[in-house]
Length: 254
Image (cartoon, rainbow, N blue to C red; front, side, top):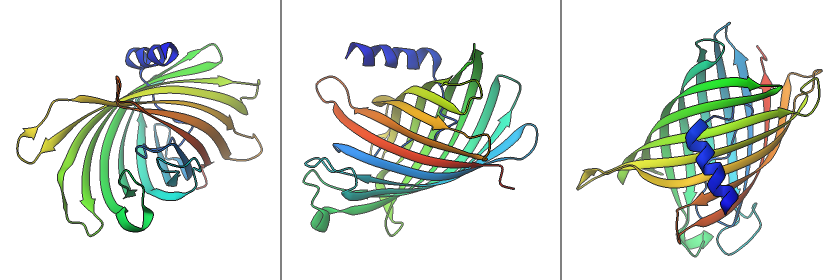
């Protein structure tokens, strides 16, 4: 618990994004989860680049432990980056998400509901080298709008969310083909209540990731496999979720 507190503190001090991985989205209160994604990262010119990815997630539910048991989410994401200088980068993105929602019983046949989400976000990043390692710092602001499966309005379906993330990439060899990437992230949100208007920003969850990344010199591809621990809530009301994550990123195919 002390280690988690320390990582969360670092998150506020340094905050940073995971550029090398297509990190898992939050999949709610479940025991375990699995996330897989395929992405394309394309350099447009000296200062601009694009990342497009498609991802899918599955969950075990609250009663089981098999992370492949039930469908959870489908994500399509497009992000554009602009490099201001050697250290600073900003980006803007649009994301579509279609997610299965379950009640506490996780009764797949009777209680599953599909929600849809459109997300617009921007982030400001600061990156610096520490020896051979790379430390990046990011502030990310999101606007999220939710709909039902038939695109009907959802009660309190508009939300603003702020994310602070810190990441350290450590090469394991001189060619930087093999790397370890660790990160910590804190999330805060405020919702537009249909009766009372906008509420105050509230802490929601923390996410801690550890990835192994392989980028062979002979191929324009990066392979990532990792683990994420998602702590939802705080105090005596914390839900602890373990994620297995795998992704493939194709670089500059065009």
